[in-house]
Length: 195
Image 1 (tube, rainbow, N blue to C red):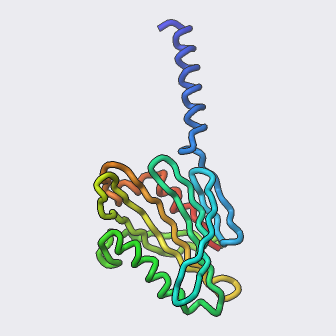
Image 2 (cartoon, helix red, strand yellow):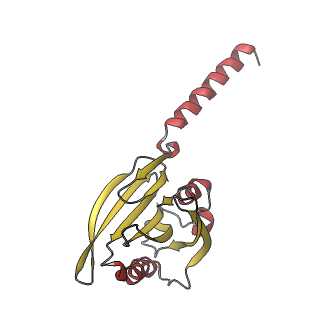
Image 3 (tube, rainbow, N blue to C red):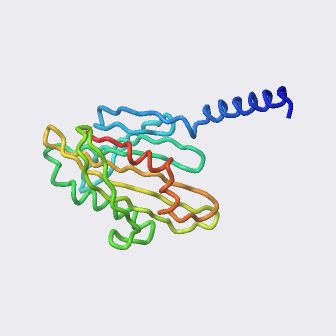
């Protein structure tokens, strides 16, 4: 090939790389959520949604930060419990897990799981568990999810329950455990830092 063709090919390749760097799929950013007590690495700018979860005749506030990239929704939800509500944490967590496991037709013992760890803001490594769920088919779309729950005591003796998840929706079923082990998904889970 001539030198001129090689230069043009190099220019086209450089331009293609620049365009792909602008893609939201590659737009990783650390989001500091001081009010919810965490930092997380999202593949785009998340939107924040506030809602109330009914639980034992109470309305428990939940903050959700989420971003949709192609077929995936990356999200972190935070439930803040005061020191007067801390006794609700185990049963509330059980309800959250039960809702998702029920949709997938499994329970906590039969769900595909993997031992994992996370690093708190103080750099302490703590163990946790990731669950890989494949939801019942609707015929037109298939949904799979990787989800992790973390409960942390707050400085004011309350608690925060975090739910990290990536929901994948596509026409074809994927093997959730294998699919969500890819780097783009692992980064999201590995870089979550609660206080």
